[in-house]
Image 1 (tube, rainbow, N blue to C red):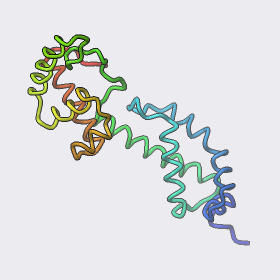
Image 2 (image 1 turned 60 degrees about the vertical axis):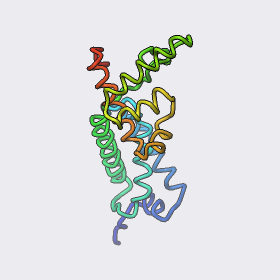
Image 3 (image 1 turned 90 degrees about the vertical axis):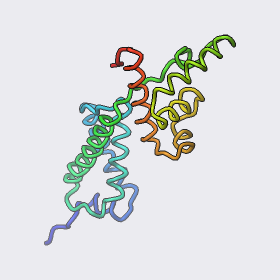
Length: 185
């Protein structure tokens, strides 16, 4: 009697059986999230649930490349999740962003409560933006002065959302250094 190449659940999942995918998820979903939660991601925006979801999507799209038993599937899935987590870690190290947004009453950005303060604030904003590279100044003007979100800024400046976040991070870091403000943790 010859042994099947894949376990019975994996074989059914390979054929597109939703019940098999539910069973695989029931076996491995919770412990995958617990495992991911126990590892440092290096990115405050990377939740274990997001990384697990990416791993499941990758597993679903690449199930044809898997060969092994139903129990072997867990190791394969965890390897996929680890690779996604490592990618997020590397991206976070390149970005080095904070999880908080600047306050809306930050006078340095020209946001004030009185009309007289607006004129002074606009001049100060222009002076601060002039200290940056043109691209960084455009990004901060869109995000912080005008109030666009990252996606709208990316479309407006013909940049990727990641490039917008990087430019924002670098610009704010440069301004902190120029203004002598302490680095945020």
